[in-house]
Structures are given as structure tokens and as C-alpha cells.
Length: 133
Image (cartoon, rainbow, N blue to C red; front, side, top):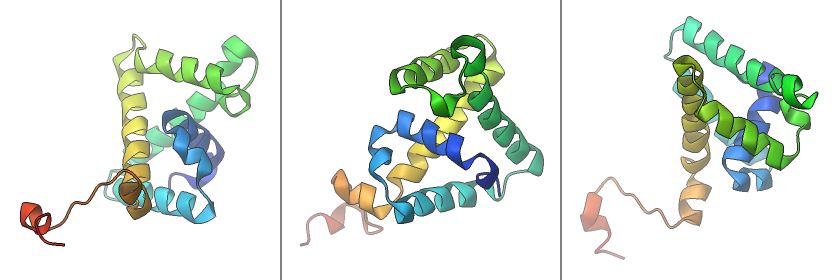
């Protein structure tokens, strides 16, 4: 399991990437995290460790600029910090952040409640399902 030791930071990142995540209840967060963990399950242990390390780095790097960890920053500071990461010169840092961002977007929008909330009505039957009530 990747998220339990970095849960607070992961959730703070998620609320910054998808502000609507701030309204999730305990069940919503549990589902989002379950989806992310399930996605990470087949990955190599080294990849999961790297992800955990990156989330820890995201928590601590703001200390250099703001003197506070990520979870204690104001929303505007969090947004600026993550914008800097997504455009950071080191390719590995950029790719890492985009990976975390993708996992968060997947975890949030793959929940049935989120899909319904944005009007997503995918069906295994494809377009024929749209023509039937």
C-alpha cells in the first residue's frame, strides 16, 4: 500500500488538483484511494516506492520557500507550488508530478458519483445504449 503513510499530503494534492475533492466524505475518499491503490498494485515495488518518495518530497519542498510543508500552505501557495512542479526543469520531477496528477484525476473521476455528476454515461454497449432509454 502506497497511500496510508502519505495520505494527508496525497489528499492535499488531490484537493489542489481537483478542488471538488474537498467535498468528498470519508466514503468518497476511501473509493478514490482504493481506485488509485488498485491501479498501483501491478506496478513494480520500486515504482511504488518512488511515488511515495515523490509525495513526501512534495510535502517537504515548500519548506525551502515558505517555511511550511505543503499541507500547511494556503490554497494559492499550493497551486503555485504544483504549477512550478509541472513545469520544473528536471524531466523526472515533471513526469513524477504528471503521474501523481493523472492518478488523482483517475481516482476522482472513475468514481460512479463523479461520472454521474458530470453527465458521463458510458456503457459497454457503446452508442446503441444512448438511443435506448
